[in-house]
Length: 431
Ligand code: SF4
Image (cartoon, rainbow, N blue to C red):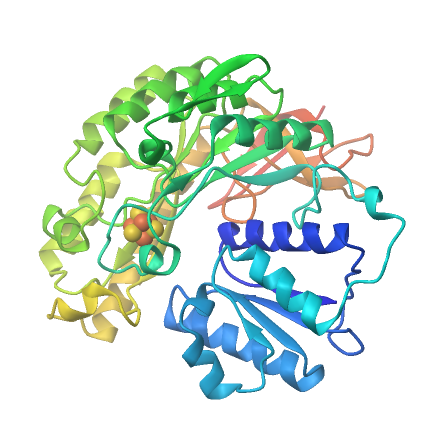
């Protein structure tokens, strides 16, 4: 069986679950479509460009193999797939693990495998063994106007805290050194189940952002929080960061700073006084790294809105920032807002944004020169290894290049003296 996994870390977790189940049933993974019994394509439907990439991946699988099962976000709109590829064997939506398995059983019935129990108890991970994504909920209760995820994935469904903690425990026992907590809205965790408590290690743990973070922090691995919105209760977690229980890192997708644009985007927590809050967080936890993403060129964004965003960036002085050019997503309410921003204006704003933020990020990073940082090693090398500080998430943030006399192992956490910084990365040595 061959598998293509596209899209965000949440989709990656879905892929891991499907692969784990299939491996448990004795199916083997191959690297190539050619010669495989079938191909599963886990698609992303977030943006039109992601849909195009998904359709291309399905096309490749059809051409090279011909027996193809499609799952993931694009599966919520099957006609888009069948129009182009009527011979696809089955199409299932996001998180429909059982339907994917049924389709696989039909297309390639499982063989009896006496080695069933050899599958490691933590499941098969697509990320390197030393870090793993931990999905705490599915779906989203927000209705941001540029996003169709709630339409595709439904409202928020939180996992009981006990379940999440048991999975985290198994991962740590299997050698995972860093847990990346993900969901569509991590700060909303538990709202749907009224923060119901569930048993773990003989205690009842509430499905609350603070409680879950505290317990995850007790497992002895780095815990990194992604997709958090600046609701007032997030302040409580900063204390855990200051105490070293969870990483001093928050990934908050602010998306904009102009109140008018945020209103049109219908962003959660848009009314909160974020600059004031960021200042307080940093007072409480000076090591805090803040990462965020923004959208420029959103319908109706004026030059004044955009300049307000640049000024806000100066004030907020975020450490790590990504910026997207607005792209209309089919089915998203933002398409009906009117006043589209011309492409060349969006482009020009994107360049201005990036140049502006790059200077801020470089300045923030420079503060670390001369300090000692704990670095987790991602890639070993003969003289220089690649790693990340507590302020760098895998894939999206910077790299720390570590010179060391003795060879370093992947997953090892070492103390590094930082000697140099550039726009995104740090350089240092263990000596
Ligand atoms: S918070 Fe907004 S952008 Fe994120 S998934 Fe929910 S609706 Fe989409």
